[in-house]
Image 1 (tube, rainbow over the protein chains, first blue to last red):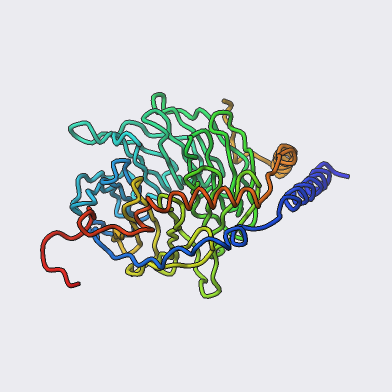
Image 2 (tube, each protein chain N blue to C red):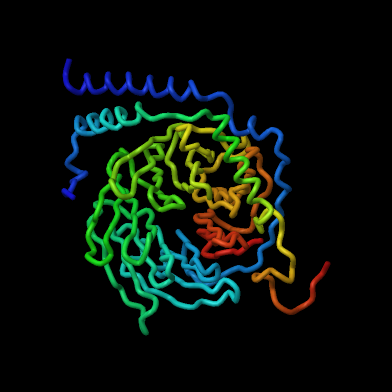
Length: 338
Length: 73
């Protein structure tokens, strides 16, 4: 038997064992376990602000930890920093490459980052008299799909080259490379304690990683297409994923499996983005069909919809204080709802 | 950390990587789904009272509301 044949056989045997182990603890699912929980009230949120300023599709947005400022990225070649309370633009950062796919705000508020088809993550200092590029992180061999700061000295990136990476912002070099996906990595989410993160990829898998030792700890199956969005729930014990297969799922980390699927026969558009309310009770999921659907995370039911965009909802975000949800769209607008 | 050139990974390399990973994952201790869901459910419910998007935000405390003008109730 060739080596490849042998590897495949071994993999199949191990997968069968893992499925059996998961089945052995699968004594219920979330909807059944939460049968006695009162349903979340129907959620009717109003658009409080429409932020106009981008001239092309918006691909990403991220809240600052001050709950007021936010950064958005558009293929008009700009990052815009907004004051969400007034609706005013506070800063504009011109990008070297207009093919941006992600942006991030550092927890300190001092730095923002962007990246995309240039395969690089560029970090900017917002606090110098004129906004300066402080680092160009150049080592990925595929597009930059997502970036998240751990601090002013470390950033995590996910890439179309199938890897994620942890970078040292002082040296500009990769400290750790996370290699295990076999498809483009599309999204990542840091755990609340910052010791681990999860990634979603075009291989339809989500993976849990240890930030420090670079090891993949767990793999979550179930989706049948690219995972475009991922987030830890606030306790850190479960993750929510959103996929091109038109569903979102919750995976429990300690049970190592899917515990509920958020789907509706009438929904046949892919999920592009997702964000959770502060308790984790509500999931705001952006879809290709121009809407953002609101799901009750415990019951698996749709409890509301945010309609108002004229094109795909590409990004969603809830600030730390949970006072609103922001949606960004290919229609070039951002909307603030509560 | 050695530089990994992802482009140079052969199908056999990827197959070996998969088997190595599965050998790690097969050893995981898995908790009962019922216990996990109960904990998640309790955690989420306990936060719901403080969750502005679940319980609603009074007009006067809403930092995003439009200022001035008439309000049609």
